[in-house]
Image 1 (cartoon, rainbow, N blue to C red):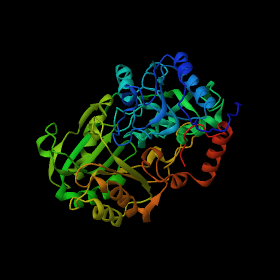
Image 2 (image 1 turned 90 degrees about the vertical axis):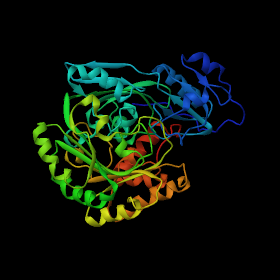
Image 3 (image 1 turned 120 degrees about the vertical axis):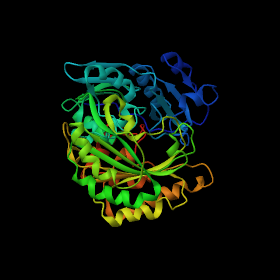
Image 4 (image 1 turned 180 degrees about the horizontal axis):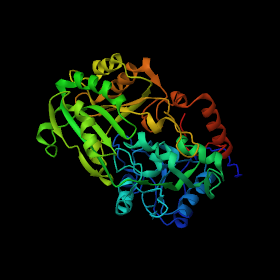
Length: 461
């Protein structure tokens, strides 16, 4: 595959003329002077609203291609935004393409595949696949966009059995730096295919992906909330118990500081709790026995573990449904000795006055440890656990959110392993390359330079 080399990008000095672009695309073309500009760019993280020079609300791959050609002609860098869960770009020299209007879904129940456009969320696909007893490898929240999640790897609560979402991708449609719409797979355009699946950024704007579905209508799973005073005993019990689970089971445990929200169950309102999450794809009776040792690890405030349709996977993690300001960063760790648990408790336990809304430790391993399908650039396969800290930059301790998030990651540095790109959060750009092996990072950068030599597409590292 060959593409035209764009000219070196020099941000324009004066106002941009978007008249021709506006006429060429079906969706809206907005600048900071337009009333709908803030709404078009609004996303899940209220603390990370971008402010590009131009935003294009794409309705089709053709709109994306027009926007990329316009950016190339005007010396602009290009980024994409679907649901607003991912990173954002800002500044005079940037154009942002929003893909939320691109919502086409095609499910082939016989072949057990789905093809989704760039703006589709997991909850939309679940509605289409559930009647067939099929599911995609969604993450902890169904409000997340499928494309960005999958390109970053895609860690599902079902991942220990089925691998990363990226492992199941068949084809990718994208717009490359020359403004051409292309389709790549493990054969045609295999270098781009490899880099996009796990490398996520810097090679083009993905407009659709096709992937295999899982034949799974229900799971046994949910969450158990323990009182915060029992955090030490629950986390240490989980540390001993989680590695004994079969690959058909998944689990994480989190210290959660909940707001005094009347929409929460009364036992949880305004409390610091420990939230155990559990999934199992086998016999519910076996799952109940499997979970039993943890049910006596501390005082249970609330439990919602039951047989669930896979479309209701949100019930396991119970992530916040609406936008929130947040600062976050995660890391992978190769082991979880007692000292590592104690290190987390020392900086983020219930006894600490903290702006951290959640500190989660998630069990990896199983099918996540090696590619289950096509070769790809997904990171984090060597880690046995991943840890995510999320702080709220608001309230009395809001200005300390970043330092508390960094403290959690720093406390675990003695056990650090390669982490997951989608969990990197505010990891400094200079450190992101260490998520990959030296050989994979070198290959990823070579592919990016070859397909986008002028660096028009925003990239990590």
